[in-house]
Length: 73
Image (cartoon, rainbow, N blue to C red; front, side):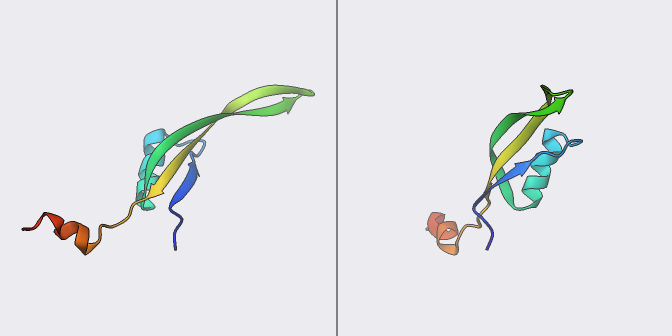
């Protein structure tokens, strides 16, 4: 069974649109975007390296037959 929510990290050479497409192909819908700074040590000092972008995504669930038929009279 798939998880209802997941965090997906945007790959280094990927645009946000490409990441969202990848998430949708996995059967999820992005609901939150989060950015975190990534630091590294250079010559003993902490230096900014890049931004890490993550998307929180919810599982797309198929509607049940009862939900589909509620509009039929």
